[in-house]
Image (cartoon, rainbow, N blue to C red):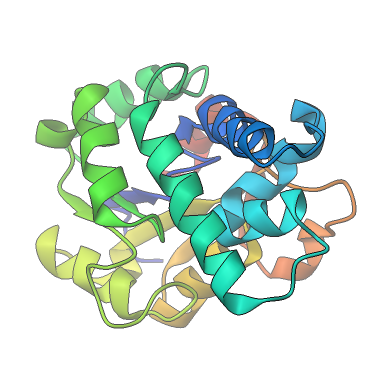
Length: 217
């Protein structure tokens, strides 16, 4: 088996716990629109699906595409203002990154989150200079589960897919890693709905805390 020299992470729900800020932004939007607020426990499992899914959660009755687009844009404006108020690395992730760097391995991020949100978030958490690559949802023509962003990550990290392991908390993350020829790991601690059967995703491994990744690298 090829040796792993690069660890790639999804962002929301894998590397960084962004759910508190994303949920808060949704409830601020709901308040603006005179809609009932949603409990955090019901928002959290949807966060990895992005802003469109969150708007759909908050406004399930709306079908007009223009209205949905307006609400999504307003949601992103609200979220951008509080991008890193409560977002932090998941418990144990700082130690895992230290461990990866101590082993002289690379690590990076491949996310579907747009760059204008990804880059300031990474910068505020002082992660940007440490990452070998930061691939956002608009870095390539295709987003996950397409392998194109994974291949770009390999080029920037100066490695090959068979030497990478990709960690994510959504089925599209695992599919993207598989499509690119990488080892894949489900972040079981992430934003996964109770109805999801992660055994069907086809990942090589599942971890329930960041520290558990050590055994696979």
